[in-house]
Every structure is written in structure tokens, then in C-alpha cells.
Image (cartoon, rainbow, N blue to C red; front, top):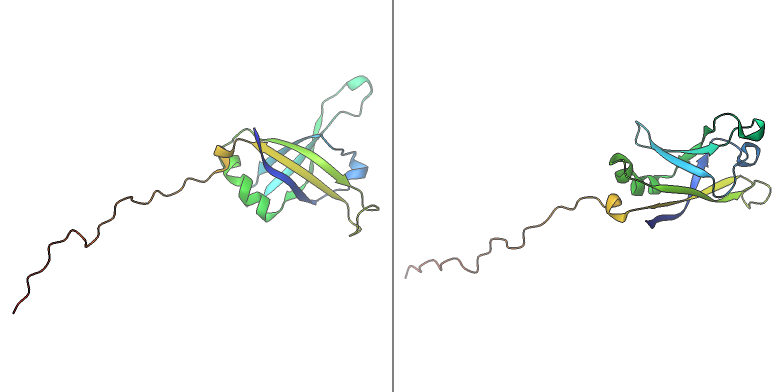
Length: 135
């Protein structure tokens, strides 16, 4: 696996501090019908001693540029490793808004779009016979 996106911001749907989101939490990407990419964070059960199931919480959506990079891999159902690398609380950010940043790792071959192969040899007029001159 190689890094595909080193650091991408998420358009948040929740407050990461109150949801208990922290760096290195397991994160999943889901391709929506409108071709946007939603980011889900796996939260452990709140019951004591680890009883209960973990739940998926919608953290937000990836930006347009990150979505364009990751979409081919999600359409192919490629194996991607997504982790939260930074959580910025609102009281520490310059903009006054909370922020979450993720990192996406995977196989670069899954991300690459198939390229159209141009013809190596195209027809040219170099080898055409010279038309006779009418004198």
C-alpha cells in the first residue's frame, strides 16, 4: 500500500470532540448515489467491559478534489486503508470551526483511470506515391 491522499479535510456533519473521534480511528469511505464520498468513523460500544457492538457514525463528506481521486477505486471496490490523522477542535483552529483530516492508502493501480492508447503509427503522406505532373 502506498499513500494516495496524504491529508484531506472532511466537510463535517458533527462535532468531532463531542463524538469522541480521535486520530487513528478506523474510518470507511462510501460512494453515494450522487457520486459524493461519505466518511464513516467506527465508534466502539459505550457499554462497560466492551459489551455491545461498535457503530458507524457519519463524520461528513470528502471534498471534490479528493472525491475525484478516490472514486475509481471505490467503483472497483478496491481495498483502501483510511485513517484519521488529525482532529482540530474549534477553539484551537484559526477559522473557529472544528476539522477532521484523513489519510487514504491503497494500490495506485486501483486509482489510475484507464488511458486511451493512441495509435503508434498513424497514416502519413510520406510514403504516398507522388502524383504525376501534367505538363
